[in-house]
Image 1 (spheres, rainbow, N blue to C red):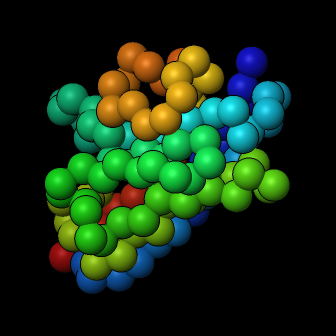
Image 2 (image 1 turned 30 degrees about the vertical axis):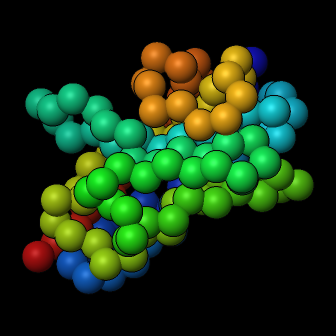
Length: 125
């Protein structure tokens, strides 16, 4: 079992930056592929970014590529999402997710079996 806890969300002005953190416990963090998803009420959740176990591979949605950076610290069991040049359309609940069964990066929501409770990011115009 893996427990994930996100932090770092809040209200930010357009053009600003926010860094989300996700702390993991319960299993060797270095064996988990990690991802960030976001959800807006009434819309399908979407993957934002993902990172492989050793940080060798990453994935970014087209909508955030060049603005967001995913990273991880396996010694601290934390994954980060640095969000720069934020836009109002980035407003969403952001969720951290862990995949213990795959090796490498997956874009598929169903591959991630562990989820955090989410943290809200609101970008004002």
